[in-house]
Image (cartoon, rainbow, N blue to C red; front, side, top):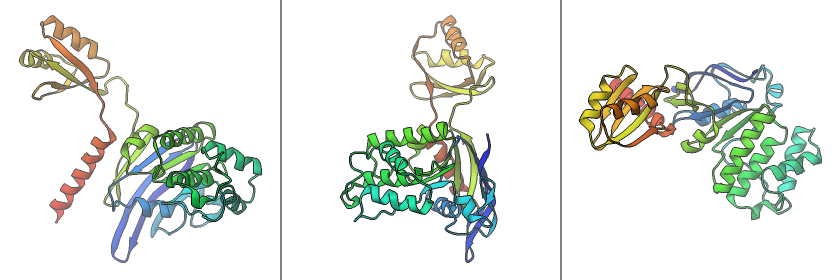
Length: 311
């Protein structure tokens, strides 16, 4: 897969305040990349630099191999974006708004506008004035203008704002379609972590103007990787003793009414078998799925501790 977006050691300061302290990452064709962080982490500043609204003080940003500072027009030629709330002309219809955006690109056919209207679920309302649109409909139209050129890079800032559950499901479908069929690289910044987990395959956790970690949202299922299981049993002491003797157990934590075990991937049937051999009554046995919220809180709490220590 080719690299669509490459960010290398980018820094940004305003006066003496350092907002971005040197971030580096890349997004490939067909990859859906989530950019997560608390308020003040520099997410909006980063996006504004990606689309050329502000310049970094150091580092490079390349889109399809073109440096955005040296070849801005070429770099942005195949970029579609929603930055914050999309600007629309309320006195024009949805179709007329898309036509205005199409004129800026210069090579959009009428048929593409019809395709986009259907894709974003506004086919029946595309000829209505935008001032009559709900917030969710305006968000859909904003996504539509970003899709007009079938962009190789799709940049979305809080894209599900105002969308109802159906709209959110449509958003997921559209993003996956662009990634799979158009091989677009998709960069999404959002505070709705559950949505990011649903649609992204990679996430960057940011805090204090730095990227703290870049991780896959898909579970690593290779040999030697860890899985966490919850075991509910009336025989906690015997179960703990049995589990402690097994070589494929990484960690055991006893809680009030259950045991949490980190185990080698694929060994859960062996655990059940060993517990049964020791006559441990297993009431419940299920896999724990760690959420982005859990990981996000780990990053934020560590950042807060580091700030407190350095004060």
